[in-house]
Structure formats: C-alpha cells, structure tokens
Length: 331
Length: 290
Image (cartoon, rainbow over all chains, first blue to last red; front, side, top):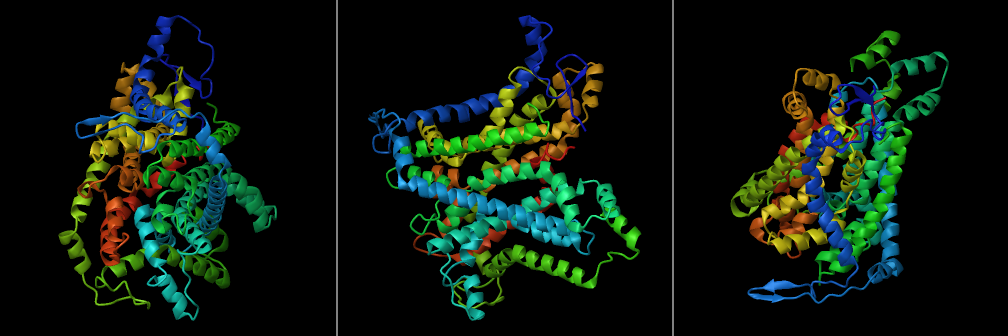
C-alpha cells in the first residue's frame, strides 16, 4: 500500500517522497496561499517545541560552557536578589568529562546495559511471538498474561522488584533458601546489582517486543510458507529465509525504539538500585541526573553530560533514518 | 486465529494436531514464561493483603491472615489520596493539551508536502528521544525563573516536551491509514483543509486519538525524574514520587507500598489491556506497511 498525499490546494495526489520537486510558480503570493494552512496546522507544535525544548536546549548549551553550580547561580531570597557569579569556561566541562574515568566506566556500562537488554528483549520477544503465532489452545490467555508486565506502570514494577530482590526479606532469596541454596545480596554487590537491573528491565520490555513481532509475523503471507513446504524447506530454512526477512521492517523499528528507551531508562535504575552500590549500576542518564539534583547542584557539569548523551542519541537517529530510507520511506 | 488455524487443520484434519511431546514442550514453555511474567504482580497483591509488617518474613508464605488493613491505612492515614489526585490532575491536563496540540500537526505532516516538512519530521523524531538528563536542568532553571517550581503547571509543561512530539508522530502514522480519497471528497464538496480535518478526518480518527491520549496519560502518570526534581513539597507529590516515601532511608513500609501499588496498577492495567493492540500499531506505524 502506498500512501498518497494531497498536495496543497491542487486536488491531485502526488506520490510520497516528491516533497522537494521544483515549484511551477515561484511567486511568493501563490507560494503562501498554497502552504499557509499546512504551516498553520504545524504552528502549535512548532511553537511548543521551540519554547519548551528549543529555549532550554540553547540555555543548556550555554550553561555547559560555564561553571554554573547551585552556589553561584543568581537567585532571589525573600526581598534580596543575588546576582549570578558564574563564568564562561569554554569547553572545560566537556574535557573534564571525557577525560574522567567516570565517563568511560559509565559509558561502558551503559553500552553493555543497552546491548544486553535489547538483545534479550528481542530474542525472548521473538521466541514468544513464534510460539504464540501457532494455533494453540489458551492462546489469548497466554497472550494476556505475558503482556501483564507492560501493563503495570514502570515505577510500580520497579518498587515490586526492589522488594522481591530484597536480600533479607525478598521472596527470591526466600525461595533460594527454601531450595537449599544461600541467599544472594542482589542489590548490594556491583555484579548482582547490574544483573538485577538487567533482569528487571528485560521483564519490563519483553511484552512490547513480543506484541510488535507477533503483529509482524501475522503480516507475513501464509502462502510463502506453504510454497516453501511444498518445495521441501526445513523449518529452519523457512525461519531463516521467510520469517526473518519478513520481519525486517518491524524489527528495525522496534530494535531502534528499544535501544532509545533502554538507553534513556530512568526509573528502573533510579528506583531499583538507586544507582548503587557505590554508583556501580548508574547509567549515563541517571548519573547526569544525580549530578544535577544531589548535593551542591552542578548545573554546568550536568548540562554537559546531558548534551553528550544527546549527541550519542542523535548519531543513532541518523542511523535510524538511513534504515528507513533503505526501506523506501523517503523524507 | 481463524486463517492461521484453517491452514493447519485443513491439512491435518484434527484441531491443533501436533505430536504430543511437542505440544507438551510448547505449553510448558508458555506456562513457565507466563508464571515469570505474572509472579511479581501476584506477589505484590498477596503482600498487600498480609498484615502491615508481614513483609518482614524470611520464609515463603502465600497467605498470612489476609485482610484489607493496608488499604484502609493507605487511604485513610497517609497522603496517598492527595497524591492520587495530584497525579490525576497532572496527567489529565497533560493529555488534553498534548492531544489538542499534536493532532493538527500529525494531520499536516501526513497529508501535505510543504517547505519545512523535513525539518518538522526531524524535529519530531529527535525530540522524542531526548534523554531526561539533557533538558532537566535548563527546564528547572526556566521554571524557577517563572516561579513554577513545585507547581502543577510547571510539571505539565515539562511533560509536554515528551508527549507532544511523540503524539504528533503517532497521529501521523494513524492519519496515514485514513484513505486520502476522503480528503478529496471533502475538498470536492467545498470544505476547506481545516474543515476536512475537523469534520471528516478527526471523527474517523477516534481510535488514533484515544491511543495518543492513553500514551500521554501513562507517560505523565508514571514519570519519575521530572516529578522528583520539580515537586519539592509533600502536598504536591505525584504518586511516582510519593510512593518512594514509604520506603525511604529511615523506614520501610512495604505493606503500605504494596497496597498503594495495587491501587495504582489495577486501573492502569485494565485500561492498558483494552488499548494495547492499538498502542503497538501506533508505535510501529510505518514499519508494517508493505
């Protein structure tokens, strides 16, 4: 199905992707009358974005080039206005961050966290989607139960898991002890804390992947499988040469969405381990947040962290757009 | 269901024909994963109906004098009702503003090609992936300058930065599925582009609008970082912040926390299960068309 697009006042529909074709009439008046309502319709979002995102972003860039902290930021206490005393320091904040060992260890852990989580989301999600795509008794029941982790608000799940994984009173350790093993201090040792937050995030993220991939599987024409079966293809060959290619468009979208969400996943880390023990499970986003809002608030440092994180994500967005373009979605 | 099972059953004759071993393995896998998915939620509910201090038990007990004491306590003796009201207020306001603002843009980028189109698509794509850490400090300073820290409008403004780009993006995906012939018919009948949008397309797009509304609501309802940073007074907490108070540095009231969690999660989960099909379609819009 190709989506058709009404082009301006002309009743004709042009194919998508021909946005930049040369205008037959270059005259300003016609140009305006042709497009003004499209602009008017976009105006609310553009205004909101510029004011609420554009301005803070510019301000963030400026702050990141200064040494602003809570202590030297201008403020008003009662009747007295204290002027700001922070100064422009150029790229010093960025250099400090990039050369610090903290940045490297946070970045490494964030990448491990993202890759492991997304790989498990996708792998388990695909496995379950394949199982649920078969004719099967109780299919809707399984489907509903498996979606449950997505239905519970993430902060509630984070609290549940913090209780389940509690070293002394958590039910996970209680079950381990009942089975004759020793308990594990899940949230108090760096390795287990990392494993725990990954497990929690996988638990949270699988349902979305499963549903999206199930939708993708159901969109693959049945006849392809039947034809392959007639030709004597093994189940593995059918999976490899029909299922995987057929899922590609959905996969690329959900993997990218999953990557962005996991990379930015705040509540799981912040609420389950609070970044601990000793900051070992802190990802870039929670680390930057802590810089900004704990102790003496380091506004400039945290703004620089934030912009570095954003830069990493923009690189991913470019990759995403490339992928879209390959599929023919041209804009 | 029908098409898939038809293909199998017509070939093999019986309903769900499969070797018994394979069938057993299939169901065993699904039962185990379903248990993993459900267990934490089930345990939450079980803990919430135990006595207030029963969470400090080192053995596995499914039931322990079940009662609703924790719920009575939470609703009567804590600030939970206040937080619930705060969360509802913030989430509803975010939803209303977000959907109204984003629908027209979604329509414009779905139907028209105009100068600036590509910039707007880029803007929508990039802003929806903004990490919370990038904007939180400048927005905090901006709101502080306007005197909106610890005020609900301030929090709503912060949430709009997340929901508006995403809703516009999702609405574009939905409008793409509405046949363009409808627009043309409206145009032929003499409707202006706004008239077409308002009188023809919007009424047809109620499911899309509902999903965008649901997404906005859930985002505002479950947001932690902005609410923690901006809401400094106990009476202004939203649920996500308030709940943390039950298990703070010096006390751990897991009994109360679990009861409040159930009160929050059950309505959210019910609505979610009703709309999730549409939500997946909205989130992967554009990827599934051939």
